[in-house]
Image 1 (tube, rainbow, N blue to C red):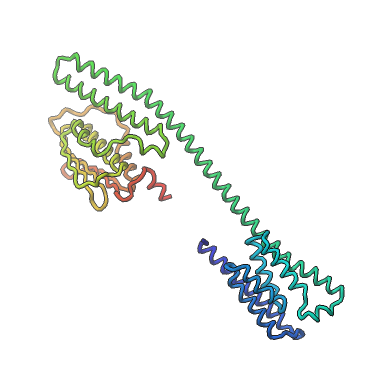
Image 2: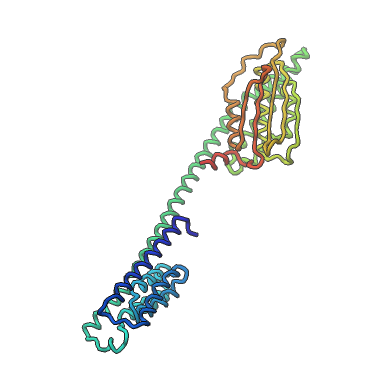
Length: 387
């Protein structure tokens, strides 16, 4: 199927060929020294008009143009028709028959008694001239077909090279992901395991009930961190196509997350679709997790509310907290890279949604993520579609 530009170009070439054939007829028939019979007029103009159908019925048009060349003056029309057939099938029997027909029509002078009166020198001249008139469009059609095939081959080679580059880039990315997974497992996993072991030892040997409860919480959080770390390492070890098959936290894990957050939280789940697409469920879970972590770090003693609902074909995740308690002890100086909210915004944008985080009028903080249900897919597809 031709593109609009290619279609207009083809129409322009067809119009130019028809005008050239018509100009050849006007110049040949308009010669006052030429006595043209009426049937030669008709056959010549029919051959010229038949060029309109040369792309759809090339062999039929050539069969119409040959009589116009034999009894009339449709030389250009016959050559254009032979060129079209030669470009379609350069080595088919139809091309051989067409070349012989055009050569014979150019060689033989009509009416036949006039041809028989020619001298040997004139006959040889018409023989050579007719051969050139038949071979020229055949050679041009073969040349254009070869050029088209070479262009397609070059395009295929360029596409193959691009695919090879992408495969190489994926291979390098897979190696880097494997190296990063190994580093995370060897370093972070070791440190978190030590924390869990120390918390377990403290829980078993301390006589203080409050310290035992805190140590149990630390141990539980460490174990959960190790589980999520193993999931992330698994995601890094698999390829991009298999990443979605790895284990991800979802909306079913929200009650446990809220219960272990250390913050008084009111969880409200609206009328959610069943099932929620995995990328959206993971993004919603991470949004709530990061927001509750920030509440515990920056607003100790404050209460929070978590709302998940569908609004205007979007999964809306809203986490709101009030003022920190004045009686609560100041929060410890947790290390922070300042990338939590930025990561949530990037995650929402990759899924085609939006994200905002603002202070409320009562001095609290609100985090809202809107994730489209209709465009849920593998993270990264939204960005690719915009390029």
